[in-house]
Amino acid sequence: MSRDVSIGAAAKASGVKVPTIRFYEQIGLMPELPRTDGNRRLYGPEELRRLTFIRHARELGFEIDSIRTLLVLQDDPGQSCGTADEIARARLAEVELRIASLTALKEELVRMISECSHGQVGQCRVIEILADHGECQHHGGAAHAAI
Image (spheres, rainbow, N blue to C red):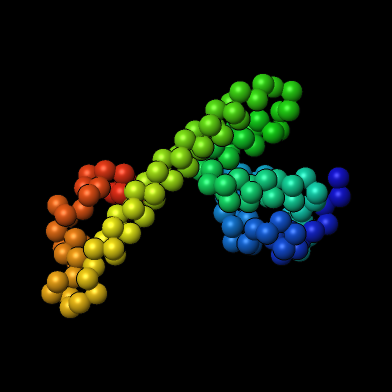
């Protein structure tokens, strides 16, 4: 495999910033590459694919430890994909919980705004509800998980 792409070109090709690539190398998500006589790392197609994989996984909200596991799985394609499926299912559950939390938060904000008389601040329901958490209809519920 030819390694002939500088870290800057690798960053541009993969959509991952140079400091992030260095961070991924420090934490072991990217392999430590040999250096040229000029002390430069050179990246090849395999490293670019790996960077793109990591970037996409991060965009989907996967945590570093999950990405590390997924990379190990990717490096050994003959094994069962059960672990990858479990990781994806766990991420989906997190997303669904977040959606429920944001939906409850949205409903609370809509209610606060709809109860506002658009008069003076002294009678503003938005201010009253924010000042007294007991006024919140989702007190202790899903709306707080979004915070």
